[in-house]
Length: 398
Image: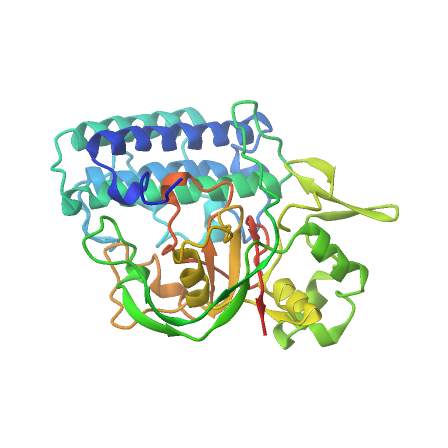
């Protein structure tokens, strides 16, 4: 599928309304998985830095939509909303900019039924307002932002289910990742357009704007490193050999005390992997997932390879080479996440700027990313130690 054809960035009101409804239904289906094991109660949810209580997430998603669509907030500043929340303490409960992470377990939130009703009410009112909206990019910006936000949180909720070992319901069917043919692709270099062009629908602030970027010639893998390839690194004692790890990687590894990726478990003389509460044979042909930047870097040193830069990845993805395969997993790059020249934060001020320099640029998409959210210009970003998301990597020749 061409990523631009079904992109949320270009959806007209009718299709946008359908997508917003689909995203909310998906959120509720994911939430029901947590509810089925009692994790709709924040008191039962582990206090981990990589996740939020699912009940808080549910309320936050509806609150975010209410903030930008129903309350006509132009920015994320606390005083920018023109109307009050449908919930008496909505801003005190669900504004992620003002509520510390650990406090989200002890806020005294409304019950599950009340928050589900809040979700339905906000969606119904938003769709009614959208039905009267103009079809230009400015008028539809906030609706597209809300859709992108819910899609991102949907993928995070799915990752949380996996992290906590919770099985998916029968209503949730995930596509399989592919075992595409492995080969190297050589690109001659030259000037590419990096970033998103103006006048093409919704654009995130960190993608602004398209600009000329000169690439040297490079050779990049057509596909991601597989479980089979990474197993060789593990079998060779890669986690025990300090020469493969950066200084930051060694410090991280000492805290983890691990000898394989986080989802691998030893079963006698072989490794298996955990997925949504099941323990499976390693799918050797699939891209290896749940590896941190440090693990990806160590593998590259061991293999005599390197990670691609963010610009190299976008250049390869945009070249249209039939063998270049992406979209099964997010991919680490060797580029720190930073602004393009002339960066200015959009109304959702905390989306990008707070994470510059501390986070690493991640490109592509995963099997859990809705097709409408996929774009070769999309810049994801994570802390280097994160490995809970659906993330892998590909390599380049030195």
